[in-house]
Structures are given as structure tokens and as C-alpha cells.
Length: 317
Image 1 (cartoon, rainbow, N blue to C red):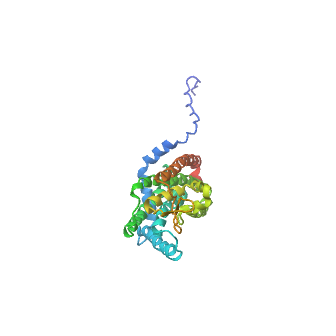
Image 2 (image 1 turned 90 degrees about the vertical axis):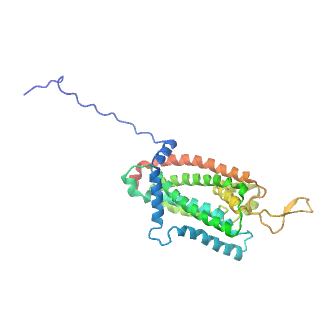
Image 3 (image 1 turned 180 degrees about the vertical axis):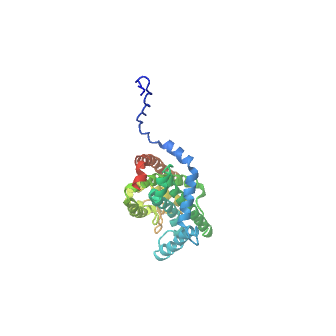
């Protein structure tokens, strides 16, 4: 039997050193990952649209019928039955409602996106942020289709938007998109662990809708609040909605007359101002800019929350 000395024996393989858990990617790295998987994002958006209208005869026509029904029914109920003192009430309603539909649809879809794609999350790796982004992308497609209905309604009713303020519309859309993405990403992650999030969101959106000056005009509440009217602008949807209304609905200013008692010009009795009287387009741009800044901060917080929770998505689903 050959005696193997310690010197001649092969040295045992070097044990691998314990490696530290890699740092979670920052916002820029996450954006780069999403861009690298942009084809998957597009395909998931298409899948969401196909699933929604699977086996449907009308398909995407349902997206067009929704705003048409709102336009007809609300115009009839509010303008003819309730006698709301807002000219072309249907156009006024749709101007804010389309922005809200995109926001609510994006949040509802985003919150359920990870749980609803459990099989995909458990099988392959990809940036999980793509799932809520795909849901928001689907809502964006519906927004474009419904906006086309509003454009046709403007032509039929000969209601001209404010062309001079048109630059404010893409700014408001950017604010709306950032707000939807930031909240959608956070809700998608939280909903994996707290499934009541989806149900609470439905209630929250219902209350949020009635606080966002969509069915009623902004100035109606602002007058009652007086010096505290700025509190309304703490709701990030109000700057967005009022900007949409300012550009698309283009409300007429109430005529004024000279008050013999004070010598000042006052609004003619019986006329209700729709939006902020005397406010130029910069007032709307300023408010929307605050929403953009706040949404960027909220997006960074949402990405941090998402990064803290995403490691256990596959197990929790």
C-alpha cells in the first residue's frame, strides 16, 4: 500500500468565499433594464388588451362606446334634467373624465399586475416593473381611443379648444403619466403581500373621483373655500383635470358689469365661472409642474419600496 505523504497529496480545492448580496439596482439601472426588455413590455401590453376583449364581438369598440354613452347620458341628465349651468356639459365632463379614466384604469391594472401574472413571475427573470408598466400602457391605449371620440364630439358640436394654450396639454399628460406610474409600481408590490390593497384601492378611487372636480366645476368649490381654496390643489388630480378642461373644454368667461355701489367690475348675476377666473395658462402650468415634481419624488420612493419587496414575489404569489 503506497503511503501518501501530506506533501504529495493534492491540496483541497479552495472554498469559494461567501459573497455579499448584490446591491439593489438604482433608478437609472432599473430604467436601463426596462429599456432592454422593451419588446417584452410591448408584448405584455398587447396581451393585456387581447385578454380584456377576448371572445368579444365589438372588441376595441367598447372603448369608444364608453365615452359616447357618458357624453349622451350625462349631457341629458345634467344639462336637461338637473339644469346644470355649464354650457356643453358633455364636453366639460369628458375633458376631465378621460384623464381620470386613464389614471384609475392604470392604477387598478397596475395593482393587480404582478399577482395576475404569477406563472410568469415564478418561471423567468425579467424586470418586474414591466408588469405594472404594461397595465398602464394598456390604459394609455384606451385613453387614445377615447380621446378620438372627444375630438369627434368637438367637431360635431363646433366646440373649439383653446389653441393658444395647447402646449399645456402634453405637460399635463406627462404629469398624469408620472403620477400613474409612480403609484402603480408601489401598489403592484404592496398588493403581492396585502391582497386587500386592490379592494381598498377601489374605494379610494371612488372617493378620489368626487374630490377631483370632474363632474362639478372647480370654481364652485373654490368660492366656498375662499382663502383656503389652495387646499384643493393638494389633490394632484385637480391640476391635471383643470388643465385638460382649460385646454379642451375652453370655458367661456362670464361677462362682467360695473357695480354702481363699489365702482368695480363684477360677474353678471346668474353666470357661474367654470374654472379659476382671471387665471392665465401659466397658473395651470405652475400647478401641473408641482405635480410633476412631486410625482418624480414619489416614483423614487415607489422604486425603493418595489426593490425592498421584489425578492420574495415568487414565493408570496
